[in-house]
Length: 253
Image 1 (spheres, rainbow, N blue to C red):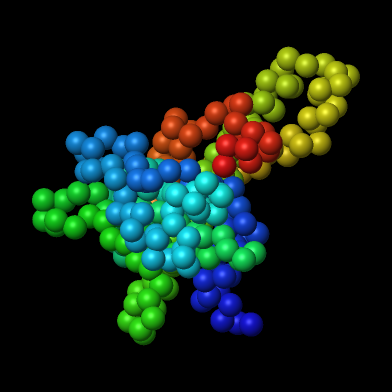
Image 2: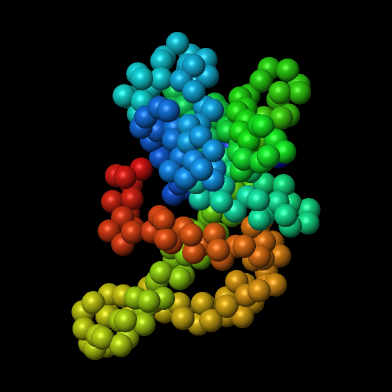
């Protein structure tokens, strides 16, 4: 089915079974709030309201859906909004920070609302918009465009945060420490060795060709020359040693 990528159920399926299944989480409360400084980024409340979500829940209300863990969110608002102005200053770029809310019903996960955001601007009174899947052709295709922006953000966070930062960059320090501090006969060394094999070599090559200034990542990813700044900010605000293991990560989400 060459048109499956257009459909909501495939969009939702890929949040769990696609290349980046580690950002979707249970929606725990309303209103959805940003942790960014309101003085710089405007009111923290999302425009995705209980009233809007109630229209999409097929008779269930938001409080009941939250209690039964039926609502989920992928929230790229806080990690991306500080970089949107820089990103949009690059030629040929138009990016938004995004939040996507999903409803799990009758064994199927469905996206029901997408919020896209720009930093507040003196020239514009509107910095946030919310879209739902409409029933006329115009709303239908605007909804597809909103999903495309979410997919673009998802690809960037996957590569710059979950792949480069959480895998390559963070593992490098443990690789160095293991070789400096443990005997090659140590059981922990033997356990880690196959996982650390080639890590330093791959990272060295990445610094030459991938994450270097003017390299492949800056040329291909939407943050462009700000890509490593996004990774650095994610490390500062999101990365925690005790939350990286799979059980802790799954429980927290």
